[in-house]
Image (cartoon, rainbow, N blue to C red; front, top):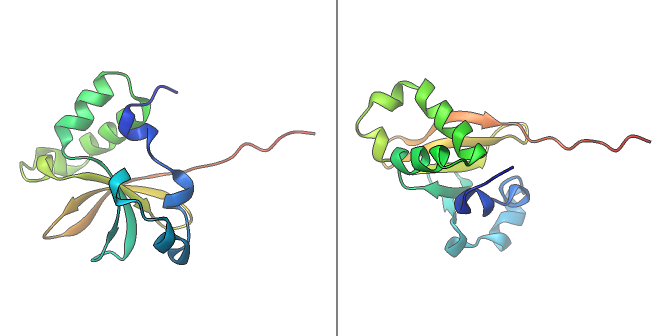
Length: 122
């Protein structure tokens, strides 16, 4: 799958790590940070809706999924939301959640990404 440079830096194992493991793995310079309000490890994907739109139109498949989720939300029409960073973090049931990071409202959920591993057939 073709990925942009931001999507290529996402480490699913880090995002799905336990809270105890995260404390040792934080790499702020790589886009990871601890979201104090939500008490969860986040990966800052990009700074705005326009960045994800450009990346999706350039061919990044993951950005296209995130962009489509954003387009489906009421937030797309909201001028403030269009300037919020898009982040990924651990959601429920080992899902990765895509959200907007609002200073006032905290993390605003856009969608969940289900991650699965194909089992080898014997």
